[in-house]
Amino acid sequence: MVTTGALGALALADFRERRRRPAYLVVLLGTLALGLLAAPVGDSRWQVFQVSDFHGRYTSGYVGTVTALGGAVWLSLAGFGITRGTIGRDERSGVGQILAATPLSRLAYLAGKFLSNLMVLGSMLLALAGTALAVQLIKGDSDRVDVVRLLLPYVLITLPLLAAVAACAVLFDTVPGLRDGFGALVWFVVWLVGVLGAQAGGGYDLLGMHRITASIREAIAAGGHPADTVEFGVGLTADNRVLGTFDWPGLGPGEAGGLAADAGLLVAVAVALGLVGAMWFHRFDRAAARAGGSLPASRLPWPFRPFRPFRPSDLSRPSRPSRPSRPGEPAPDAGRRPSADSPAFVLDPARMTPARPGGTVLAALVGELRILVQGKRLWWAGALTLALLAAAVPPDGPTHPVLPFAMLWPVLLWSRMGNRADGGSIDDLLAACPSPARRLLAGLLAGVVLALAVAAVPITRLLAAGHTRAVAAALAGVLLVPALALLCGTVTRGPRLFQSLYPMLWYGMINHLAGLDFLGVTPDHGPTPIAVATTAAALTLGALALDSIREATR
Image (cartoon, rainbow, N blue to C red; front, side, top):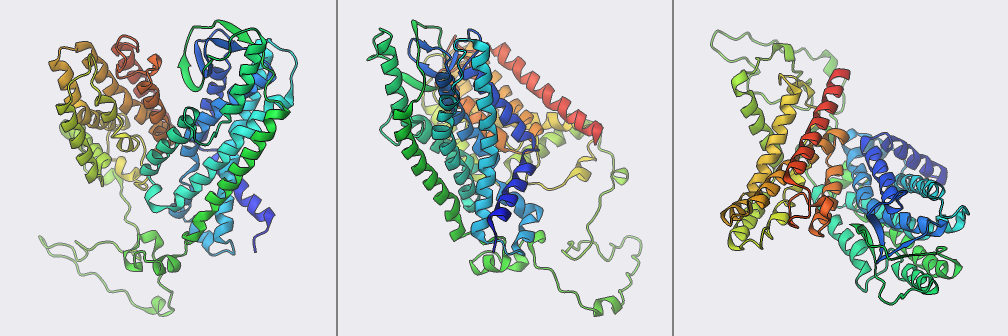
């Protein structure tokens, strides 16, 4: 029987292992940057919590609320990307097989994973709360620090939502169809509908916007301003129009009562979601998995095949000498596939035939392209459908309506760039490549080829219509997205950061955020094509520099 202390130790050990990963640091820095955007110290036009034509004074309640809402939006997407995948990692590393030999039950294992996910997200939330306190003190609008009103939005709004995110990450890890990149796309849709869409619809108010906006309207009306036409929203926007300020102390005991009830309900649902996977999760038990209809032992991957029992006669059994081969005759073991019991074949880079300089770049490009599209036959059907749709739909002014959706389709393929998350250890194979930088550049070119494959028809339609600036903007975006994928994969050595970051960037683009319009969807409002191409070059140089440092310190 697993005690509460053992369960906490399991969750703490898993949390300590994950906080050392680069993805944790990247998302943590993004969380702190978002806190500075939500409550900027200087005169910034960027906002996360919008109150139309008004700006609140930086009291503890206001700063705590806007940063908590920003953290809820950011961590519910990016945090999901870094918390899921832990069960699959335990299975690949062999830790799961070790745990299968312990008295740890399926329910306890999933509960430990849920607590570990919550600790990862909670640590980032704690850092965000510290940033909110620092912003209030630096801004100087209010010297009175009310710790209760500062932390209340974190406890009643953001933390319950992150508990649901942590539970869904565990649930997605137990469902075979949602473990990989497809699960990231499913969660992106859930995030759009549940977190952002609930603000305008009549669904469940995950962010507590109804109570927050009602309280702020009262504060605006008390200041002598008309509050009936004030609109609210959560999301990254830029607006220079500020007609007045309002003094809002934050959530009080009256609003906290209703939010506490909603928070308790959400936490209960989160716990149920996190543990429901125990109904079909086999706790890495191969016998139970085979009984449930999975692959037989002979067809399992080598690390998960049952070990052949040791027999004492193996020590006394003479080995059969190998017959030397005659000239021109293949060796006795030629053509024999290595088995699970045979020693691993070690590649010696010094004995490899050096690659011909003339064909290295093209061969590397073809190889990287094959790696990206491997096992994705249905992807080409979707790309063909988008191409036919782009050919049938005319350009909408200086832009093409199919282009943004075409540039979202290869997101799972781009997320493979810069990492070998599911390719095993291939350092010996890559040692045959004469230049690591050339290998990365070949991967970047492969990503650009994929982008051109899906964007060629919309770009051709724009070129035929004479929209040369839109063509230049689209080509710059074709360079930017693979460069971003290459940097994300190089930094984290995995696909999940790009799978979480790029959908947010894409969502901001289609919502006409001028600073994020890398494809020129909103004409004459986004960055210039030269600026986008320069950013792509900077991201590529960052990936090359990081990979060079790793090669030098290996």
